[in-house]
Image (cartoon, rainbow, N blue to C red; front, side, top):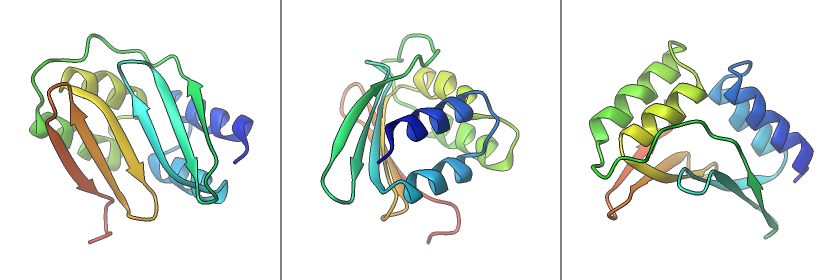
Length: 130
């Protein structure tokens, strides 16, 4: 995994200069098996197919992570991101407001697991993967 490339792709996603699918394609190309985004600590954790990992601090801009977890609000912002009506920075702020404390993206499994502060969780499959 090339850390500067992964940092660059996250920055581009936050700046809305690449799409979520482009982000995923670059991560796969760099050997990322899964990654964990923590809104409470504002960090990414990357895990490679070969067993390597690293942590990267990211200045994610959002309000406090809500105590109440809303699957409906997460699904709504995800639909807007997938349709191009919203970007990753919108997902960050609205996801935190929806109670998402962190999430894990499984590239091989083509799904995302979202977790709330009290153990709530929601699984969403990548578009077209089911």
